Image 1 (cartoon, helix red, strand yellow):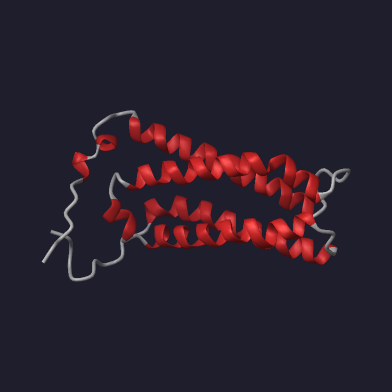
Image 2: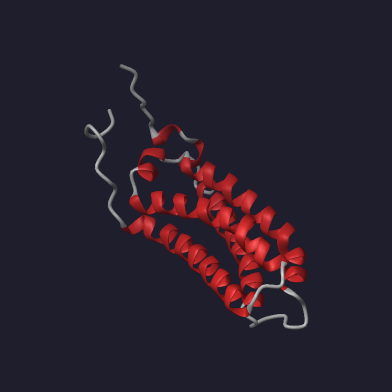
Length: 160
């Protein structure tokens, strides 16, 4: 039987005082940028910001920054994940964060984008913006809660 063994002590990010904090700072900063640009569009959909511009104009102005931020966030997150993959994998907060991230990205590039680019009613705009904000905020909180929740029990006992 093939067993996966991973020793976090062999990861270079765990053996250098500044590398993990650096990647964590990049991860958080780019997440703030991408979620911030999405929130700007959401606040426009709610009629709270940039009332002289259409939601489509705001979306076009922020879409490149959102995409760059998401690419860097996902890349830096994958690097951070390598520091202790089993700990991340067996943490329910991390699992929720990954599922919610996929849902939020799909929602952002389908429904959210379509509503922002069209002339929908105020109620539809508000509903889509609300769902978007709730998804992204829940991802932020899941990332914060990761450090405060217990790991799920390992299937078949702890890894060897």
